[in-house]
Length: 406
Ligand code: PXG
Image (tube, rainbow, N blue to C red):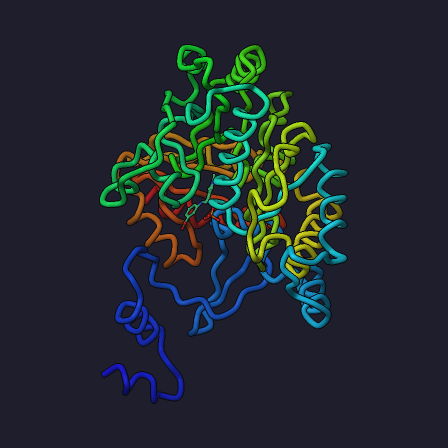
């Protein structure tokens, strides 16, 4: 039957779904929409039906799909040089470092590819800093993390997840992590020992269901870290680069982490680019050969990331996120429906929590032409590209209202 499919001239959506189910590991349960092309906030399936993308690849598409300026940078760089490895230098990496420095104020950058790699890099950095600078006895470094965290899928990272499914069958895990409740600064302070080198936290927990901590939490956590010589590491892979209405979510609290982890939208939706940013004192723990990546810092990635940052700044996407996010949230808070529990969010990052499973709502929204994804069972996540226009928000709202109030 599959050979028949492969011989067909024009494959149907059902053909693509069958092929994927037959030959791919079933580690996802995607909505059955087969996307063929996309532009801005809109995606088109193989039958030509149009959908508004309200997920934006978990915030990797803050600049929208196939942004022409990022595309141009990609194509231009792809025809020059794409990969050198870090054995040699290239003329794009220093410029990305400079752009990141100017945008964020952090002294130095360590480039990686995926988010999980950047989190691993932050963990390695904190541990090495703990031994070399803080003087923690070798092998004793502890890192504190939060319950319901999501930092990626490597063995070390899932090892400190509190989600049973993410861990099940993947042990043994890396030791040296302590879990405290999210949003509880007192618990953080109680968990610190002389061996604690870092506290790793998402300023808003995305995968946990867009959980916003009590106001002042991050500020308090930051003070606790400072007074105990513990590095504050914020994972802004999903919350950063404009998503919450500030360039980084930590900025809502008037603090500054010691280590900042970025990814997703840094690649403008074209290419995996991630980075760890920190002070000179912290990143100075590295000596040649300590850590690295074949693809991290490659010239294609750097050219794309530079264009992605330029678009973010020049199109004022952070400001748009603040303004349009507040507008969208105001509309969504007028919703009434027996299934609706709570609407919460910051910037264009909104969670609609239901009393029952969110999946059927996402399926119904898909039929209305809106692509959303449930998170944590009962939360519908609304996180469109930050280039979305007010009329498109109105369009989306009409459909969400219809489905929620049905
Ligand atoms: N930190 C945070 C806060 C994230 O949201 C990661 C780290 C890991 O990034 P990478 O690039 O390694 O996936 C994320 C990723 C998925 C999926 O399908 C990933 C995320 C959210 C939802 C689904 O793997 N976030």
